[in-house]
Image 1 (cartoon, rainbow, N blue to C red):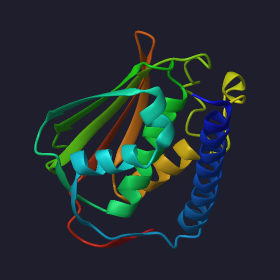
Image 2 (cartoon, rainbow, N blue to C red):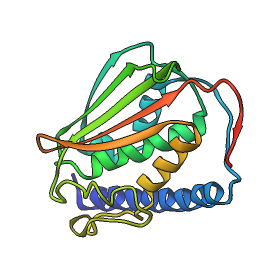
Image 3 (spheres, rainbow, N blue to C red):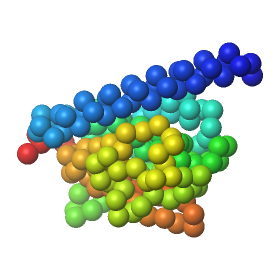
Image 4 (cartoon, rainbow, N blue to C red):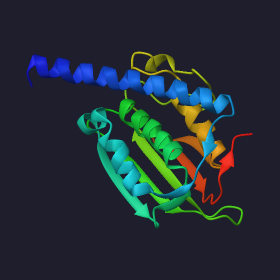
Length: 196
């Protein structure tokens, strides 16, 4: 590709990154002020993943996707909040994996505590920044020293955890054979909930 095309790609990615940081700060403010609300509707996880990936130019250029569905990928959740969760996790998977590697997405039905729900896993090989610190990963503004060369605000995973808590879901991280694996679970939530 020509030098001008490379500059254009870099500029588009920089604007995308700045927009993402501004959006995260705005969402974080609503979450911390207790102004965030959950407005649930039926969400098609497969369709939402496709939309999130299409909106991330860097993902299309750097990573390959492997998608495994072992369920009906429909869940009753807040589509705006769920899209934010997916966007942040997919952005991290792409940003922190080696170029040209695969990001594995897995979706499965998983009831918990008598409630139906959906489990989603996002796995990627560790790139030059290495694996994250499992103890600090979900802290506000935390970024590992080796990740600081890449764009980011240290708000993405903190926001993901807060939004999933708001939707009565959960998230966990584990390292498996050199891969970073994020697993989040969402219950079906038929009513509108307000942050407490």
